[in-house]
Length: 223
Image (cartoon, rainbow, N blue to C red; front, side, top):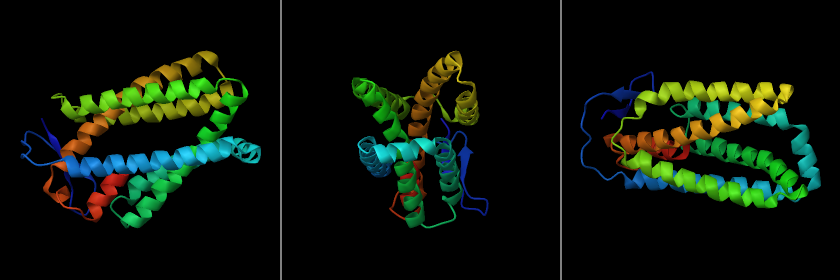
């Protein structure tokens, strides 16, 4: 199975190396950092969502800025990807927390709408089913012998296509398209979870990430 290596030349980013066996190293420190930052991000999102869902003024403000918030959300994602090799861990951390707060604004409106229509139980069901699916795909991605890295480009392009379809459906309001987006979204993010877990595991085995440094900190935040 191939693995990733951190590219230390001027271009930056990751390169994919074929047919090089990984040394027997402990990948747990980096994995722990990744999941720690994931937990912090979820706590920020949950806190902002709770605050928004319990304030009608915040709900109205977020609802009126729905499309701009979604656009800014994706801009922040690409900004973090760009900043990965160019700025300090502090700035990457700030962008990550800002992104988590944006998620909270968006989900807060959704939670408010569900509670107001008597569908509050749907939130709990969605949370537990998503958590279970995430956990299962994380285990699969960590333990599978199948090389998932070759699917990276396809999954990224599929994600872009899904985002475009979601934006288009804001204006079309097609029930069938909404259903298709939901199904494709579940399948796509399921595959991405396994793919990202394997990618992080392979990166954690690289010598550059065996000690805590700026690059390790930024990788842990970006996941």
